[in-house]
Image 1 (cartoon, rainbow, N blue to C red):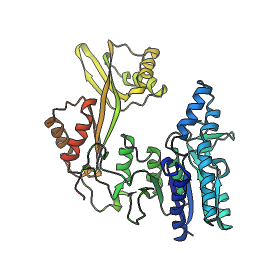
Image 2 (cartoon, rainbow, N blue to C red):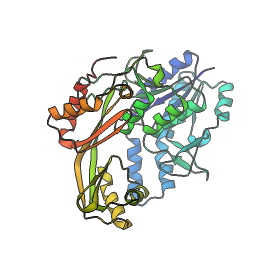
Image 3 (cartoon, rainbow, N blue to C red):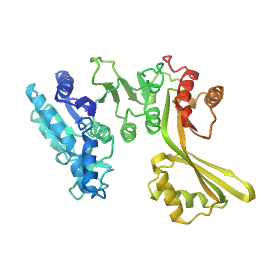
Image 4 (cartoon, rainbow, N blue to C red):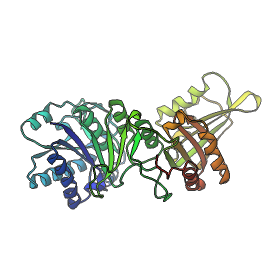
Length: 409
């Protein structure tokens, strides 16, 4: 019997009525001959509520108890989904992470999946169970404590189960009907993609696109899990949504397939740093230890044999970055300049590998709109720029037009 994984996000299971609607989609796949593993998130808003209660009760909370509280939202949804399916006369059973068991490391609040033994679920499927409803976002540590996988962790749970059980596909149901060339709220010309390569989706997810969690795409690419992103609120269609797949399953790709953005960025510059071997390690080592997510890095030679070191990070990590640099004492510098009013805009496409000129077209489009580029970084399939935040939406629109992303392949 083939296995199919279906994941339903918080908006898809926000009420008992929405759970019933999701259950009907599950029933359709059971009727198509699949054994189904359903991964559920907490009802919309519930995780934020639970996190708020933890912070109100204990601002300096024990991370193990944080996980015990915050993971409970998914348990409620799993039980309700299983009951709904049983009312439809479909043999279903709910499973919490520790019951599977989904084994993780001991990093509470940001645990990594280490193994998913299949024996327990295989035994129940063989005995007649048709649907296993698994609470997403959670697992069990080597010490036997509940762990959580971090925000968006239910996506990662779903892909991990698809890999472990050799599923034919992993369907991610959410409140959008697929992956778009950019945010439709910024430009009405945004177009839904029928297919997108793993690498493109990984870049878009890491650059600010909210459709899929980055770790889930990494896992899918590593294990070759086919992902389909589709809406819980649209009528069912075999061709619905966007298929995230291997590059060789896409006949031909545009030079650029998407424009991503991150609004809340900051640019930090250390002026007058000594230009010597090891200076970069002295700066970025303490930042890494402090958990600062450094992204774009530029080094410029300044006067007197000194260098200026510029990097970007999320705006809410600026204070942590300052503290890490000052506390380390490993680097002498003239001044630390912070600009917390910038945004990152990126174009992504596997077609850049075989087509020249993407950077020139991007920079020309920004120039025509009078947008100044502060920092540039590139990779094989991505070009990112840091610009003034007030121009972010204009830049996204201009780049979408420049690469004619409204046109299908």
